[in-house]
Amino acid sequence: MNIIVLVKQVPDTTEIKLDPKTGNLIREGIESIMNPDDRHALEAAVRLRESMGGRVTVVSMGPPQAIDVVTEAMGMGADRGILLSDRAFAGADTWATSYTLGKAMEKIDDYDLIICGRQAIDGDTAQIGPQVADYLSIPHVSYVFGVEEISEARMVVKRRLEDGFEKIEISLPALLTVIGELNVPRYANVSRLIAACGKKAPIDVWNAADIGCKTSEIGLEGSLTHVIKTFAPKFKRQGEMLEGDAGKVIGTLLHKLHENRII
Ligand SMILES: Cc1cc2nc3c(=O)[nH]c(=O)nc-3n(C[C@H](O)[C@H](O)[C@H](O)COP(=O)(O)OP(=O)(O)OC[C@H]3O[C@@H](n4cnc5c(N)ncnc54)[C@H](O)[C@@H]3O)c2cc1C
Image 1: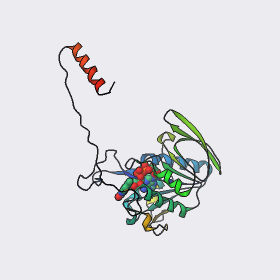
Image 2: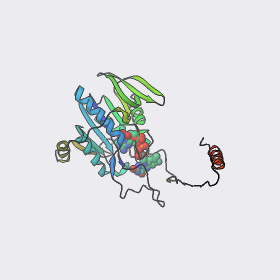
Image 3: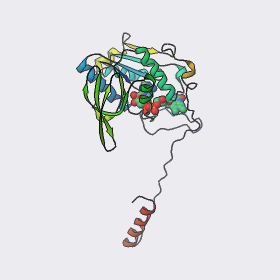
């Protein structure tokens, strides 16, 4: 079973701060981490490799420093790492990102399964998995939290719904997006990490030409959406003290809660 896992490097915060003048993300002072859902995707892949054999390849698209998440993934058990990095990829929306990742999947070619996290904690769109599957014309299942059966040609997975779950049979090759309930990810192993930092580590860095991308399809130029304005929502907390007779205060409180549709 040859499995590709898509991992994204994200800021270690869900409270995104934006530069009010440029609208760009303020990264200073914020550590970068592997997107939390992607840890579960990688753990699932490594467990499948351990039980069925094969190879786990981890792919990330990002700036040169995203090599850190690829290295960490090697420490967690991936056999091969690929970083897609090129200035021409900058400014990509989800469409251009999915195209670029899809081109890398085509170059890797020999895969049975692609596993992604459900959602990145910074971009938050949850679009990449389904879009990559669509680009590759392979089936996909989102919100996966269990693998029930798997063979070379098919698998049965459990998919979380708001009020229950679905069991879905899917033919391979396929793409899954997974949620945290799926497993408990392992920590990176120190000796694997040291090997992943060495010169002979099986980590490649591919640019746009390496994966045969058309420049009109990548980065800002290939993006179908363009950001007009970015802003962080402002939360205003207002406090009001109610004083006086307890009976009256409770009545006023209930009225205010009704008025504001809280109860
Ligand atoms: C108009 C527009 C302009 C943008 N401009 C920029 C920009 O200039 N610079 C910039 O950094 N970002 C930019 N972005 C954000 C960028 O497009 C997204 O970060 C990226 O497409 C991933 O989307 P997401 O974060 O919503 O991932 P989701 O769809 O929420 O992620 C789901 C899963 O897909 C996989 N995945 C997602 N992204 C990657 C990746 N890069 N590599 C490997 N796997 C991945 C992971 O498994 C992840 O768990 C822009 C977005 C838009 C809409």
